[in-house]
Length: 235
Image (tube, rainbow, N blue to C red; front, top):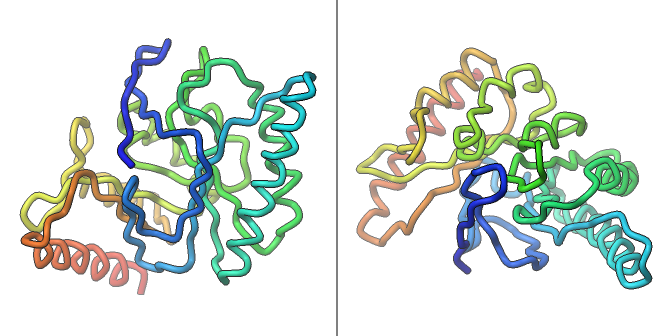
């Protein structure tokens, strides 16, 4: 399932995935992810939840509440520790982030052993950027592609103790990863997060573009070099 891109009112190019519930045990085709701790993390993309008073939308709110609870219950049943949420529609320009947060935290409080984490996905909400929307959550997921696109990587340093997962977005070139269309370099970004900020949590690699069978050996070497570096630094 491919993602399309649109330009929002903040002038940012944002991806739009169909507003469907995508409970995911990684990897998946739409947003392939390869985790160093494969079964520690699950990811869910949720339909937007907005504060309204009409009967139909109240039903939507209740549906959203149930979906969050079900996602967390599914994560708990798997024995995973982290559940990452895409909590809003990236093209939605009219929703109440405080209401969404209250609804989310109400469900998350029912699963105190899990880290219910919100990712810094793009937003079309006027006057807001991803970091502004996620900085009040207890657990957050840092996606390096979106942080680079919004110029917000350094804004995560004060939040690093609340980062539950880092999504390293990159394109495989040879046996190395490249962060495309960005002023940041993939390995410099990794160095900042793990060495400068001393992040000791989970890393998940999300390759951009297709990886062909002929690239499999290069992919394994690229992944192994990251894993070896990550483990060596933490020993």
